[in-house]
Length: 339
Image 1 (cartoon, rainbow, N blue to C red):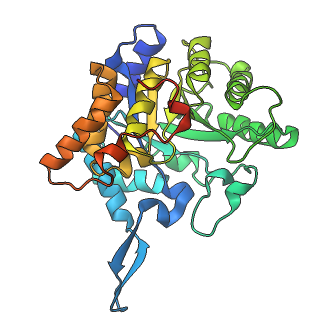
Image 2: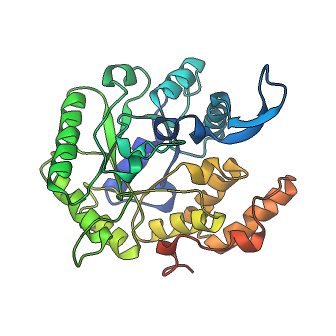
Image 3: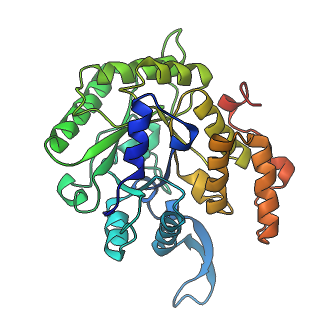
């Protein structure tokens, strides 16, 4: 674990005390994909296989995923590095977090709705609570963990998942482990009557945490961006006790990435936890640098995309899309408030 003072904690103190400035926006690199996507989460590539004598498409070795984690920590651009326990163990033993202000964090549950690997169909069904990592082992490498939950507007399933979350809080109570709470949108359409999904998710979160005291509350949330109205409502509801963060979702276009962090910050989110939007970028370090500039220096999302492509060209990195295609917004939740 890091032997220096956590930059994340310093920022959170200013956020909850009402002294937020754009430099306090917290960015996490979410590289816990192996917990849900297995080997495929690291990537697929054409590679020569020992003894086969030809190239075939197989998973990229884990060492490259961890190399990307190491590079990001050394760049000192993010505040949190979220990992599986096995990655946290490997990087901690290497000394990656020694004298670093980046907080290592571990995914502490892996409910079935994140099981999205080759041939799997688990995400087509409601989540069942499941936990691989133990708190005892996790505490050897981190004092911050992620717990995720999904609400389905289904009494039996929601009560079961809430009981599992309550049990988790009991497990970490009395230890040095803090947590943040990830709330997924269901992977399939659910019935919320006349209310939209964003309102249902907001009310589910507030109701879930209303009976939880400060000692057991999550440090912040990680939720899907359900539009400006839903984001502003939740962010303004109880800002000293409920710090809102956003998850990145799919890789999308570079405009999607930059638009998401700009709108989230504008409407009250104070944390961004991006996985594929960082890892799948042509230049992960450059993406995060520009994410910072969007929040801290009021750089527009559109101008950030143009600058990103210009910087790729300077580094002789071939972009995955043309500039014109990369300026498109493909996430419909972002279109209404795009500048």
